[in-house]
Image 1 (cartoon, rainbow, N blue to C red):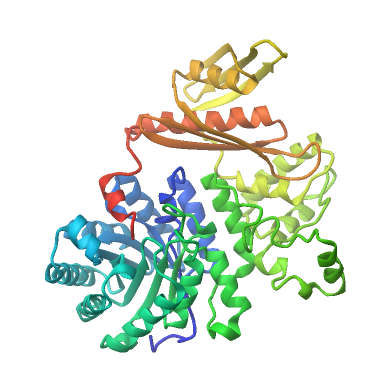
Image 2 (image 1 turned 90 degrees about the vertical axis):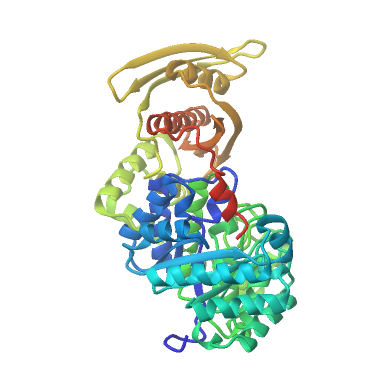
Amino acid sequence: MSERDPNRVLIFDTTLRDGEQSPGCSMTLDEKLRVARALAELGVDVIEAGFPIASRGDWESVNAIAKQVRGPVICGLARCSSGDIETAWSAVKDAERPRIHVFLATSAIHREHKLNMAKDEIIRTAVEGVRLAKSLCEDVEFSPEDASRTELEFLTEVVQAAVDAGATTINVPDTVGYTTPQEFSETFAHLRKHVRGAEKVVFSVHCHNDLGMAVANSLSAVLGGARQIECTINGIGERAGNCSLEEVVMAIRTREQVFGVHTGIHSQKLFPTCRLVSSITGMPIPRNKAVTGENAFAHESGIHQHGMLRHASTYEIMRPKDVGLSRTNLVLGKHSGRHAFRERVKELGFELDEAELNRVFERFKALADRKKELFDGDIEALVLKLDTESGGPWFLEELETGSRAGTDATARVRLKNSDGRTVETKTTGDGPVDAAFKAIEEATGIQVTLRKFEVRSVSEGEDAQGEALVTVEYAGRTHRGTSVTTDIVESGVRAFLEVINRVELGRQTGRAGTDNRSPARVAQAAV
């Protein structure tokens, strides 16, 4: 602690671990890598990349992030067992700065009903876990799960044992969102006062949002001495979610005189990062979401508009550009050049290499031929879909739909497989989207259960692009697909085909029937 700024709060992002536990939010390896790179550019200090023991896929994603993402500490979660810890180390050991995060429940409820362990067993197991992790990795974090419902005296005893065993970070989680701001501030102040060697470790806070107090409790922990906040982009996570990264970061920045601390986050990248995670997970950002919602900087009331015209600070405590929200009306058109397009992409907070820029620019020109006006939302949609579009094996060659009131709709689809096959089917259904979905199922031979179909506009105007989100269930596992085009029926069809491709690839790799909530994943859910 003495080697770094005592007023610097570290940002520990667990979007790829705790955030991914949100129902329907599972990500592919490529998607996780894309999010991890965005988090590194955002300036987070620690990326909790996953729970390596949960599945082979989890291990592979953590290992890939450890090898490819530089800058932040790359952390893997583990229970206090040798198998978990050794697997976590094998996944993160290639990181520039690896960390093992071990956890063990400590509350009376968990001791009695989940672990069936006495207090002395809890302490012994925690010490053994921390010592094993320490023998492998210099940077070790320990979490007493359900800390906010653990007797304060026993919590202090467990934390002391973990510090003595070599833990460098002590995380105090409000696992079920139970505590209140004043209680939590006092808990951290107590631990820092009564744990020997407290000045040598970083105290961390991890809050869930069950009662809507995750951000408030995290900020109170900072006032009590916490110098690491564990949070997720858009506040996604188990049940009601986690502490929202963008909200807690901007609270610290906006009220720095109150908290007396700062972070290393590049706040101008908050909005594009939040949009990226929203696009990949299929969880739209609510319009009234603090900091990054569409209404966060909108003013409709006459008295508010009058004040804003006089001075922006009358009703805005943050500037849109502070969080990377740069909005213009008509931005570019079909005659716009590559240089102007590149500059607009940069202004929106996206960094693309030359090959990526070329791909997006070609799609932009094609879109400009179909739309009279293009807005920032159109460009964002093109960039965000850059690496998430289906890579096959099925590709849409032709789509034809028809409908008339009082009769079934019809759909004809022509698909091409990467093995060279071409399949064409024609079916009827309750509307053109239903008919097209059935045609794709018939053509591919894959039958799924549709759980959710949503369409929303990503920009403005009568010719706005429509983003379709399709969620299905297959063999006990949830799959999700998205697509954006100016035709909402086509968007739905392409999103559905993306889902079918994910199912097909899962069957080929033998993972199609794997439930996201494996026993190991359930065990980590409450941290």
